[in-house]
Amino acid sequence: MKIDAGIPTNDPRESGKATKLLEDLGFDGAFTAETSHDPFLPLVTAAIETEKIELVTAIAVAFARNPMTLANLGYDLQKLSKGRFILGLGSQIKPHITKRFSMSWSSPAARMKELVEAIRAIWDCWQNESKLDFRGEYYTHTLMTPFFNPGPNPYGLPKIYVAAVGPLMTKSVAQSADGLLVHPFHTPKYMRETTLPIVEEGLSLAGKTRSDFDLSISVMTATGLSEETYMNAVNACKSGIAFYASTPAYKGVLEAHGYGDLQGRLNLLSKEGKWKEMSSLIDDELLNTVAVVRETPEAVSEEIKKRYGDQGDRITPAFYSGEEGLASRVIDALRD
Image 1 (cartoon, rainbow, N blue to C red):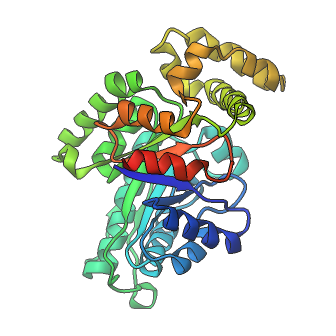
Image 2 (tube, one colour):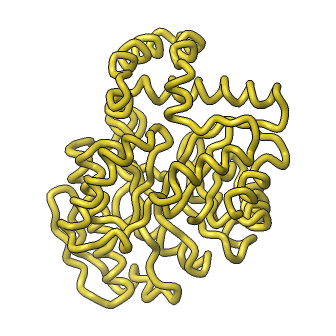
């Protein structure tokens, strides 16, 4: 099981240093998330300043771009990192795509599958000198002259991971991508009873097996090196759960544990900006069901292994405490 962690994206000059630190600590992968900054640019300095650690966008917003731009970015970062890049994509939700990015939105699962297939067609053209003739419902790529063709990549092609929560997107990802980015708002029960059977169905439809596919699981954790920092992490984790649980896309996770009615209440409070009230609705049972909550980093690591040791190919512990030394203790315990 590989162990990953996030790096800051607010200053690309610092991203390389942060990634080098993760590499020195023994992490297998470093990921960037597309929030208030571009997720690709920080990985340029990360690629230059490291040698072994894998570099992942988790996630870059797919529908804010087109297959050709994503193909270029992925191809170039694969070359710069000498074969260590993974193109991680996500759909985002309709309001962000249409109102923030001013892009079109329709049938996200089908569109994502086609987008991944289009990227692969472009890469095949560059890598194997095949004719570019991709004609889909959402994307068409039929022109590639020598001037715009970068030629074969000496480090091969990157893997493509895609984030999914719902059944349609999960099946689409299993069919078309190399791995699934499991959202931190999940539970082992939801994974076991909903996600994994759909993954197996999608793999079967594509003629693939589980060994051909990676599960990259992000895990919400709350721990600390003191009683004060532990409680601060617990409260921050509750806020994170409340935020995710207010989103309709994640209602299925709540329903799996009898909390389906909570989503509507949280959504209403979020529209009123009542963030503290939202956190107060997250009881200890839901907290411990979604997140790994333990008083010590070592206990967190043991619980992660217990929950995901036979499911995940990659694990990303999401820390709600930035204490120095905490991450290294978690990874040391995970390695034991």
